[in-house]
Amino acid sequence: DAKTTQPTSMDCAEGRAANLPCNHSTISGNEYVYWYRQIHSQGPQYIIHGLKNNETNEMASLIITEDRKSSTLILPHATLRDTAVYYCIVRVAMDNQGGKLIFGQGTELSVKP
Amino acid sequence: DAGITQSPRHKVTETGTPVTLRCHQTENHRYMYWYRQDPGHGLRLIHYSYGVKDTDKGEVSDGYSVSRSKTEDFLLTLESATSSQTSVYFCAISDLPGRMNTEAFFGQGTRLTVV
Image 1 (cartoon, rainbow over the protein chains, first blue to last red):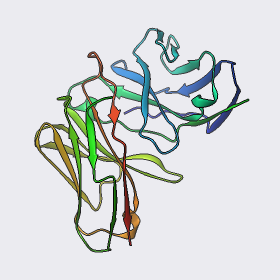
Image 2: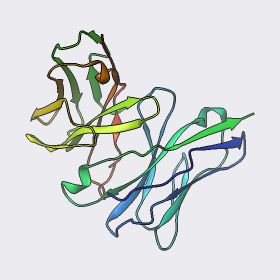
Image 3: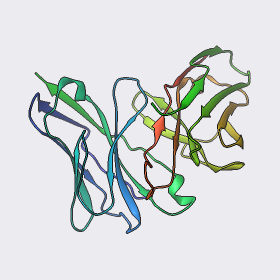
Image 4: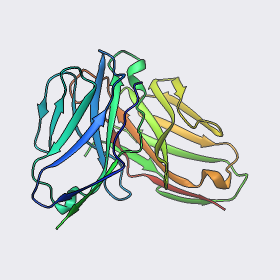
């Protein structure tokens, strides 16, 4: 699996957009980009995923660069409840090999009033 | 919420004793995972399964074994627990990427203390 690089921590003002970057320069053509977050000691929660195109759902937007070597997760209007550790993961789509799901260190996002 | 249950939720055991943690799913997902989480290390994959009786090692598999005799259950066994295995253990399930609803769902975690 391709490795990902994320900043260790970031701050964001409440109500502003939070933009969390992820570098995955060794990503392969058959690998998806997934984002999860973990709040306190709860189990991680899925946010969004994509392959090539930008994606949006009710939680966030995912912007993937044209060369797919990096991506940005956007929380459009961050709230205090978005304070969490955010993980960017790449995952192959092939059978069996697609199973391995490796988490890096993630970015600790602090949303401040 | 996805149908995934971990048991027990909390356990205290003595060094050298065997311990088995159970993960049960009702989603019929192909993949099941065991992770441990320790301060300063994030989530680390112990073992995962890609089908009944099909398992593979993760990043930190030493001292752990797993079994999956049916789709819905994935067991994690510490043959002889050590204090270094004190941790919070998470189970997760997912289906193949590229399909609908392929995100991983996580259980609530099991806090294991080895004294």
